[in-house]
Length: 215
Length: 242
Image (cartoon, rainbow over all chains, first blue to last red; front, top):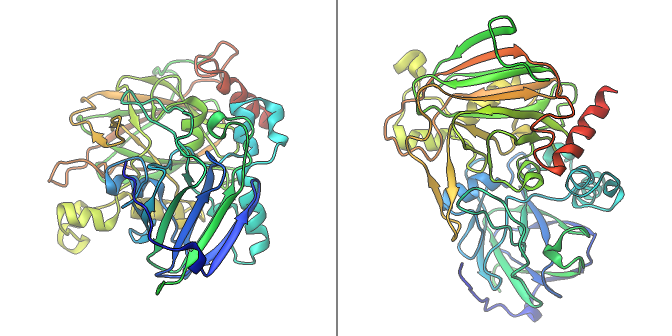
């Protein structure tokens, strides 16, 4: 766990958006650009997938990412690996300290298993992902959804092999920043989960910022 | 009631040679025993609903629904649709890896050097990702269908700081794990070495496959009642068959 602050000035960012909870965002981040996700109110889970913009069949691989670095948590220095063994993004700053990539995204169906059958009618990250892909005219669909990153989410694994959902370690104003190593489509669902204590049952907005390579 | 494997209910058996890949359909109500014949095997595996292959094994949903990062008796393999593809009904090994992914061409060449078909004939070096792509191609599937896989017979744990540790000599000769299928499932297998196996030699081990007719789970079933989440997972699954 390493805390690394950024020197970038938000006023020099070339792109800025506040993404409310329950919304999705699909955007191309160009090679060399730096992308920041800012947890505005604290302990928000930001479910995120990455694809090569040139060939989206090449996409983020959670298992290759953790195996290559020998650690299951993502933090500053982590290289987000693709299914083809290339680096999509490098995390260059992180004031939260660690992020999950084993917990996946919530979905109507997994909510019905985890909480209660009637929870499947609640909004979920997979619905947000499918909404974004359904409108993107980019040829991507459910087949392209794979294990994602949960920025700001704390999902400890014990040495005995249990997976636990712990209280968040993020807080208002914490951020994670990554540099694109190729042209990358970033697909985000700002998580609407109301059944999990990880976000104190209160999904909140996040801020997304992009700086151009020269900044 | 789940019948144990016996001479009378055995459907077929085959040995998957070390390094080999294969794929086949297991029907609802049948089970598959995987046996590590020599010890030290690794079997990378993916699972799909045979009737709707967009529905597939989902590592995160399997882990978070059951609050586990590994598989052993009682745990089930969830699809992304909140249904149970397969249940672990027996296991002598105790831990099967879910978080380390599969080997690929670059990794195998870096660890073991190159051994092409021209040089080595069928002892050529194989890797799990290319093996999966070949098998998936037989069913009209491809790269978009490769998701985080299970690695039977291998153990990788994480310490409190998150560092991953591969357990050497984890699976003994004769170690086995049994999967009962809760729907008709396409099973895709690669008997290649685990990507974190420190052995410097290319030495993939064979796995004995034994399929039998076991029946569908009753209300008292161990896996169904292993966790409250699994009761709901089996309910979702059984809606397909009402």
